[in-house]
Image (cartoon, rainbow, N blue to C red; front, side, top):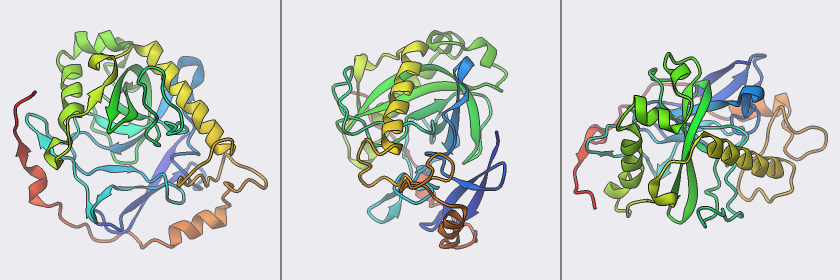
Amino acid sequence: MSFTVEERGNPNTLSYRLFFKNADGKYVSPFHDIPMYADESQNIFHVVVEVPRWTNSKMEIATKDPLNPIKQDVKKGNLRYVANVFPHKGYIWNYGAIPQTWEDPGHKDGDTGCCGDNDPIDVCEIGTKVCSRGEVIKVKVLGVLAMIDEGETDWKVMAINVEDPEAKDLNDISDIQRLKPGYLEATVDWFRRYKVPDGKPENMFAFNGAFKDKDFAIETIKSTHGFWKALISEKTNAGGLNCKNTCVSVGDSPFCCSTDEAKAVVGRTSPCGTEDHIPCSVDKWFYYEKK
């Protein structure tokens, strides 16, 4: 199963979108149409890469837009870039999401005591390769961190691309600590402080910031898949989410999107144009003492 992307609009502007197609050239939603599992028998999951390692543009699956293309997050009318909190530069992993998952804002998690953040579950892929935006990769899950972001549960799954040369040696969260010393601590530090330059408080974590193991992570992912199933089958109120899809919903489902409808959605956006410059201020480093 393979997927390609189609750029629309001008990169580094408000118009930029990244739409997805399957192997047949059919437009698909990266939120709803790409299967969660790449190989269920081996617990191998698909991940849609939103932000390549070492970049700052806060790209994300647009959960409220038709076909859910990747676009850059906007804050107060401006494109959002993640600040560099010393010693970090941009994202320190390939960052993305597992399709067909959803952290339900109406469900209070028993471990975190907070409701979900209304997004697919996030993934930090720790392999050697710097992935491309929109790349769909297959990963082994290694563990999970429970971040509390402004009162919402925001799970961060640690994983590695199955094609990575180190994948055979990484099978659980303890292997990251052993083979990549400092990476887990840096991950907690990154998530704790990355919003501080924007005037926000430090983020908090359940389990005192400790990572949970592979088995816990897989059960957490399965739970969010269950929430997504309820969403796509109309058993849960979608709120402002756009659940239109071309491969999952059938018949008279309001979420069923025909091929012609999908083409029309893409056609309403502008063709890919000239790339704008990223502001020099994005490279600034921010320094402040850890609390």
